[in-house]
Image (cartoon, rainbow, N blue to C red):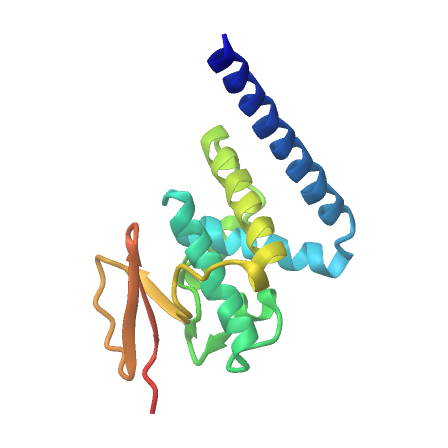
Length: 174
């Protein structure tokens, strides 16, 4: 009987934590400015198109790389600016060059599954945006990544980790 009561009490405690956490997150969402909401939406797009079908940890890693770039001083100082930056004819994030026209086409309709995946990417983006300064960086400061099926000719970078289908890199110290 005591074990049952202890289990019920533990479940109630965990449920109250989740509810309290959700309410706190909701309050934070409400205080985002219009500009911040736009940045979160850009981050959500980047997560979706770069890692939408990866595990959540991989999606967080892509969001972290995007934010690492923003705060590095080497890229535009906004998420949207970093995401859309081109150097000559090369986009910082390949989906932006490859898929952006298709995505923006008025005739394109998302499937139910794509909508669900995008909503998850949006949640990951919001979570990472709100907690960036206080969360553990699972990429170990990475500024770059690619899928396992390509081999870029990048120089002066070193692998920091592999998560899901992506390999993450940071610049070598001089």
